[in-house]
Image 1 (cartoon, rainbow, N blue to C red):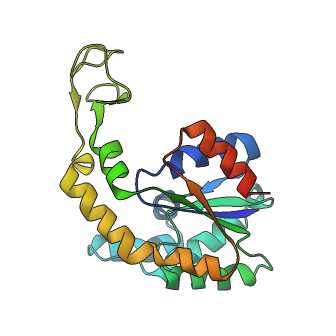
Image 2 (cartoon, rainbow, N blue to C red; image 1 turned 90 degrees about the vertical axis):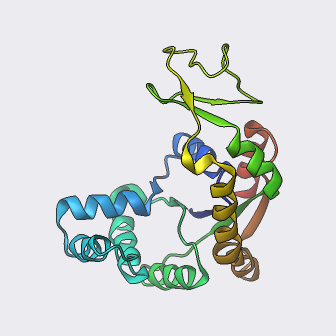
Length: 213
């Protein structure tokens, strides 16, 4: 199965993707990882991508699709794979469909992790991270034993810049503008399933498995 995970930052897509990797043994394709690998290997696409990145420009969709095409031909993708974070726009989704058609494949399912913005802001802005060991806490749902102190190593906890409310709101605005229209794209293609991402992780996982049937 070729699966696309959709949803705003903090909706739990990454958590569920990791569980699917363990349960189904489908690889999760990260465009960031693919870019870094191609650059380190100095492949033709990697060098092309590096040229854009060195100038501070976005890597064109054609290069990213090329990297995905190369990655999906590897043996571990034979039985399917998970895309989380790509496509982000309708043109990217169209390019992905065209690329997969060239391999006689297609996206089988797109799953939307639906959650209201206010819940996301609360979920993300409450996160705290240990400056030493990276352990994660939450000021409401996963408090440390001592306020501001890591249970594991005793170091101080901090709020990451991308977990600050103003940054979260900007990220959500970008998501709604660019990525949310993908839900209609996959709905028209009769491939969309919608999950309530505000539920506990185990309930979301059960709903996800049901959506994949």
